[in-house]
Image (cartoon, rainbow, N blue to C red; front, top):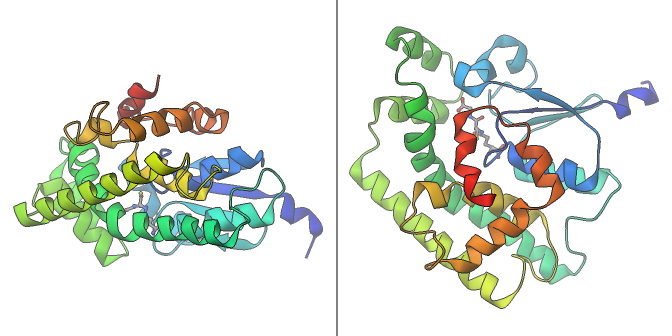
Amino acid sequence: MSRGIWNVLTLYHWEPNANSGKPMLALYEKGVGFESRYVDMLSFEQHRPEYLRINPQGTLPTLVHGELVFTESTAIMEYIDEAFEGPPLRPSHPRERWLMRWWGRFLDQFVGPSISMLGWSTFVAPALRHRDPRELAAAIERIPLAERRIAWSKAIHNTFSPQELAESRERIALGVRAVEQTLGAQPWLAGARYSLADIGGFNLMLGLPAMQPELVNESRTPRIMEWLRRIGARPAVRKAVALGRTPIMQRLAFLE
Ligand SMILES: N[C@@H](CCC(=O)N[C@@H](CS)C(=O)NCC(=O)O)C(=O)O
């Protein structure tokens, strides 16, 4: 194996959104150079054979370092922090590190799927509804993961049930309360320092002021708004945002 291949770092990503945004922000934050490969999710490029050869699940993001392939955005961030030089993004104190992982798990498992459900109905599906229905049906048919097939189909046909949407709103409200309360006690989610927990939380929650303005706004959640702006002003975030290409990026206007 040639040593040179370890200099090759390629990130396959879509917009700097909930999942793709995590490794993008972590790499820029650490000052690690990488090749950006934008995969157009709205053109279903993530289900093309050439991408499925890299990540058979057809999801984004995927990081390729030399001969190694990494999926799962939160775990990818930990790899980036461990494998490369640059400012540490994981707290060194054991309790703070536990807290960083606690937030990662809570946001990914409990809040993330609900924000994703509302986000897809609000931002992603409307961008696709004008397309040829037969072409969309064929694209959905090609999706390798059953869970993603169902999510696409429900979003495009607007068939999330009222119960599903209500449950998602409740979960998001609970997540928002937890973050707002935590930021009242400490500057960052895992304690005194910016960490992977903030990167994950920022990527997940930055669409909420546009998607649920009644829930996340200046008067109801001032700490979240200030935290989102504080993170949004970081040079690493500006670089990641510059890689966005779709109107979905307009939801970040409040950061300016
Ligand atoms: N748990 C995975 C989730 C990856 C995922 O589902 N990403 C979405 C984009 S946010 C995706 O690739 N969707 C493609 C599709 O549904 O076709 C991670 O954190 O990386």
